[in-house]
Image (tube, rainbow, N blue to C red):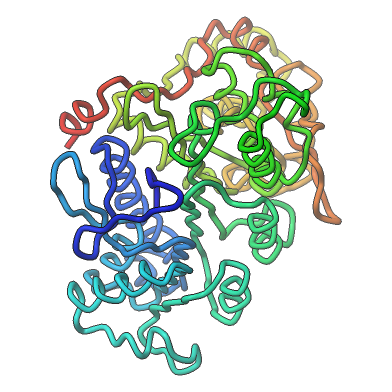
Length: 439
């Protein structure tokens, strides 16, 4: 759920009432396309007859439908798109959909939507015992904490968890799910999508006060104290306060909260991609796509760029490679034929395709290029020594076996190869226009 009053939910028939065609419609479109593409890859695809187990976990399923007040349209919400994929595609026999909803009224309306749109689904089975559930759709009416324990009983396989709260998720919940799923160094097979009401922290909204602009607690109002406590829960600590409780431009503070939250999520994920949405003037929200697999992030980013007219990043490979060849004649002397050295191939992958220029020895695309872990480590060590990448030292290790993680030294790379730095994604002023142009 998004764009909601935190205390009062409005419904049009069984659909949640939302305002702002742009944010909701664009977000829904991206999730619909992403769910289908993600499933087609992680299930093994047609080559493997889609046999690999997969699961979409809707942590805040709401009713499965949204009503756009501005246009009078009723659309499928994210949970509705997950169910549509499951029930209208003949190959999704091994796809599971888990819908969690704590609110009584939303949960009852979710059941209404399922019965109306997909009458073949037995609500009794979806709510019954996991052992006897042969339709792979699970409805859970419980708090998030209780629901997480129940999810553990289901064989999920490759999974997406979508967190779409009324305000924010406590970090302890994010951590609990991550610990259950990502139990070794940046293990693939789990992705998170997390919705953040970015601008609300600084502009406020009905029944929610913006953050104060000072660290001096004696100057906070009682409602500001409540907002600070909520932000403490968002980050799971107090370290954010010195960076966000400042008297600065709202735009700057919005970027700070996005950067802080992205780095927080990188504790568990190799790549964290914040996609910005601007439903209304001065309003800014983000969907954080979190993955340990390059393809998942790249697919998501391309969907977003297409729909918002953000340009693709296309540095000149040929020109940059010619510079590399001249810089390293010793490396080039060992190369025969059209093959390019592993040092270059890994460096260019990081520059061109790794979100924020992040890398480590266990990146999936590196492993496809070079099966030897020692050789991959050797190349990354060389790239660090030459100044192209730097170690990420601020990320807390959470596994017993841990490998160095790196980020591109964009200043050095840009200057050396005469290429531009990737531009940040922007929600253009009229996403409605962009959305219609791209469909």
